[in-house]
Image (cartoon, rainbow, N blue to C red; front, side, top):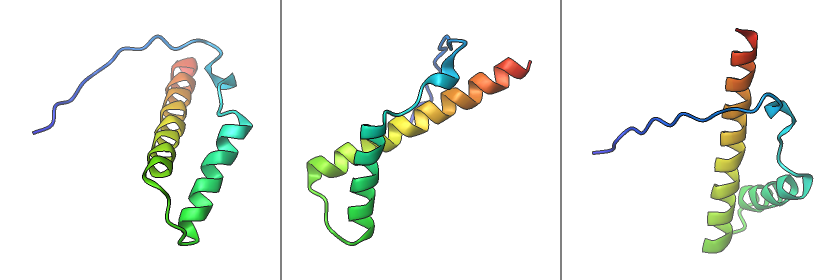
Length: 72
């Protein structure tokens, strides 16, 4: 059985300026392109891609919450 964890994070006012660095975004795109082309990724590359996707999702979530809070 999984447990839900709720975290309260203080969001900086300038969160919109946070983004993935171009080199990191390019690396993620390279890994995803290779995978889509049917080229197998090593275990380390697969874990790297999963971690980068998690980071992108976290940044997106924080930006959406920051935008929602700024509208209030």
